[in-house]
Image 1 (tube, rainbow, N blue to C red):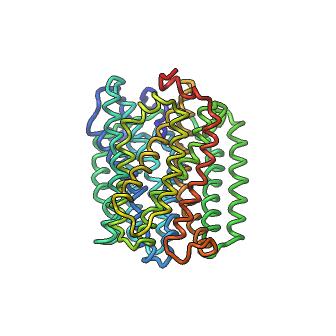
Image 2: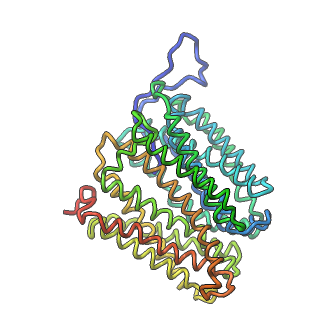
Image 3: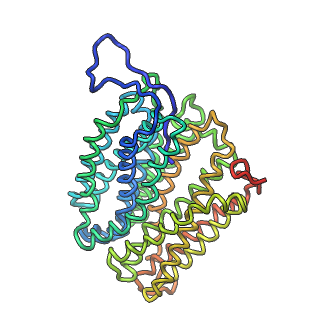
Length: 493
């Protein structure tokens, strides 16, 4: 979940000069759900989530257009997600200082223009740059829209408002693989971005009429030093990982970028621990149940988030499937993810969060081993059943980590905890795709020495096996949790 900012009253601006009616901050009292506003924000969230996953099935077609290996397209996915992670914290502050309507409209316009730029890209660096702009638009669009909905909705109607805002997270990942695969197979990969243009234009027009100009002039300043160090560290880390995993490794670039990343992130941690009003409050990591989600949960998310990116490539390059076939098959993964949702809470109440978390890690690793063993001749029902099982394990794991994260966090520290967790989740997802691509390149180098031959799917099999091994880290951390961890939220004695 992304940060929704601090609740608070809506204030106007001072001054003697009259403010034009269209630009005047509106004092919007909390009331019943404004359906139009909630659906507009839900539509923006749908576009953002869709664009985070729709590119994977189209990656081979994009790579052919640019003359690069298919796995290299991961940088466009990683750049998008990490831009979201870095800029999310700024969105609420901008809304409070400038006004929610202006920021939301600016975000929609930026996202729409960047989508058109993605469709017009003539090289992978150009696509990556426009994806960064897309991420900047998405980082402002969704959190600001959600903030306005929550601030202008009465508490009695919050459940209905949250329902409107939840469906994109459930539906978009199911639609995205098929949409990306079908469009790139039967039309052109550029259409996966062009479909955002009419949606964005409609959203821009509706935003002017539906989004109130909520703001808080007393919001204070942004921690620019913390923001700068964090942004530099994350950007350098991505550059370093890409240089390590390049088709022709660049040791000087990789070493320099990773050194900068280590220095910037270390400086960021030191500064954030000392700052009076830091960008994110790292002191919250002293709470054990929160820390296991921040570290082990982010590691788990990184490993699991690599799977939807690698699967379509594995099916296309390893099995010879079309992008449409690969995209439709990956729906099974997300169907399992959505289908098990109603059972996740009863499972945690029956067995406890620690047990469920351990089970999700073990089941996730077993599914990765099973995926590595898949062949082009594997019966389709068996293949789809394995993907459904992987989606089930994924959903249970995410729910367990998200539930235990805030179990012992005091109410007055919830905003800081939510901000840090949202950032770590996005970082985990973005870095997971980058690491997955790096493991495929490593798999290509070791496949023949390991006796896997020249099978084009061999690098992916190695990558899936290595991802399974990486799940040992969150598994061990979960083992160290007390058996009663999270009992306060599950009601289990």
